[in-house]
Each structure stands twice: as C-alpha cells, then as structure tokens.
Length: 151
Image (cartoon, rainbow, N blue to C red; front, side, top):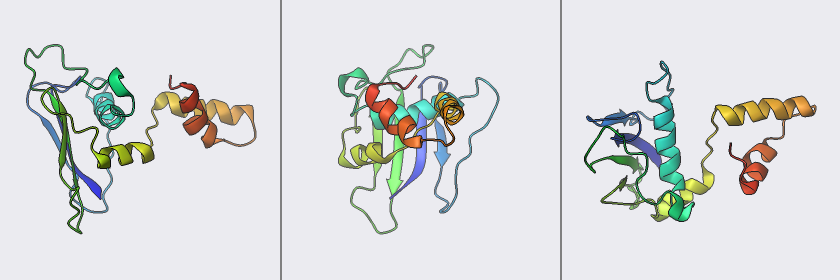
C-alpha cells in the first residue's frame, strides 16, 4: 500500500484551486522545498493532522485550519492510496466538513507507524546529542510524545 496522490484545497496556505501532487511513479520520493510562505509547512501539517485527527479525538476531529480568506466550506484534504495487488482498502480518503475518513482502519494503522519530524524535533535531536555521546532517538520519538512534549 502506498500513497499515490495528495490533494489539498482551502487548507492553510492553499486557497482556491486544489493543489494536487501525483506520486504514482513507483520508487520515487517527494522532496518539498521553496521560499518562505510557499506552503511547505501547510503540506506537512495537512498530512500530519489528517493522520493524527482520529487519535487525538475531539481536539481536531472537525476540519481545522480552513484558509481564512475563503468563505465556503469546500476545503478538503484527500489522500489516495493504492496497491498493485488490488487491496480492497485502496481508495481515496477525504477529510472535510462533509466527510471524515480519518477513522478508517487503514488511516488508523498508518497513524501508528508514521514518523513526522519537524525542525523543532530536529533541533531537539541536536540538543540530545550534545548532552551525551550518542543520540537517543527513542527519547525524541516515543518518550517525549508520551509526555506530550511536541513543541
């Protein structure tokens, strides 16, 4: 099972025409770079919030962070998963005001295994390294999450 497309509309920096990222080429990675304000963090948060919304419960169950300049409720995040083997779970999952697929079994499983590291987490990795002779990623990814230290 692999992510084959990401589509975002009226979420944070993405306003109006949906951003669609096609990832159908097998064996390819996605590198996102650009100027400040170009939407890199919005893409990151769209993916992270989509996957974490069911696990966090009512905190972000509703579609959050609608672009403030849009007056409609047409915003969405869509993730398309497919599998060469014809997996029955392979489909497009949507998170919007009208539809919430974030509690689907596949999304919940992906949430358990995902790894989102932002610049703050990378900085903590650097600081952990300076406190000892080796980097303990377990502390960064598991212990801090359990204690609620994601800042």
